[in-house]
Image (tube, rainbow, N blue to C red; front, side):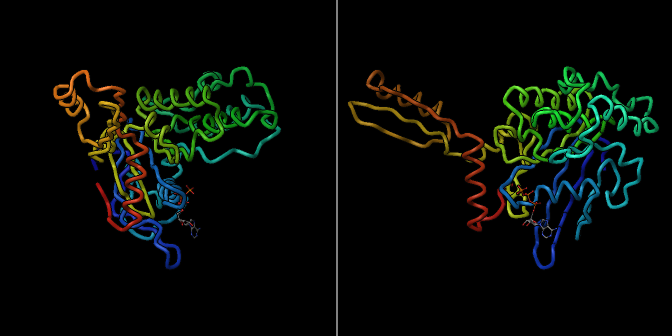
Length: 298
Ligand SMILES: Nc1ncnc2c1ncn2[C@@H]1O[C@H](COP(=O)(O)OP(=O)(O)OP(=O)(O)O)[C@@H](O)[C@H]1O
């Protein structure tokens, strides 16, 4: 495995009884990369993440996270990972700063010259936007503040790989924006590899360097948001009127098409509207295609 690869998944299979929920899943994530696992309910996103975290044993395939098979991960390996689960419901009586300092102390023995562990408590509290609430008891926090605390708990040990399951669920738009900034910063400056699951296309597009679309246990697409949108050629929609008549065309290259349109009809063109293929169009088309049995589009 190259030193640049933080997560390496090859031919991963998972079977519950006779039900195959992951079939030949193969992808890689590099250091400092933000990768989104996107897919409908039951696609296998959480199962994949749980296998990578070492919480679930796979049926077949090769998996390495930071060069280690999660099924054989040691405490030292685990200390290099961060996990943000759906929501932290315990420790209601603890105060925010107190809990983070307590959890952080566990990581001190895993500090290295390169990565100082844990994250200094007040700095961490500020990074997740909880400074004003640092002295509050956890049970008095709002849902969004609790979510910020979940993120703080996930990153208190300065993880090299961070797993986020539906990270922005329950955050208001401002908190979501700040959270996206924090994740991008962890990846860009801290070289943290981030693997997140989401149903939210907008979030995947804004946050992820690369998107892996899973459907019914199979990868149906893998690429940047722009690459995925481009792959669905013919999806730009151009609408206009000429002499009172309306026209709608779907074309692969709307810029060239519009140029030709004006060259031919000049000022007779009115009410021009161009709608680019969006990631949502791509996603819906890929998932429909996979479900109709026309297979992967990698
Ligand atoms: N412990 C289990 N035993 C049997 N089947 C399971 C178990 N856990 C998950 N499954 C099945 O595996 C499939 C994938 O589930 P998973 O939770 O990984 O999907 P997901 O993509 O995360 O879905 P969601 O978006 O709904 O969270 C589903 O069909 C689910 O019913």
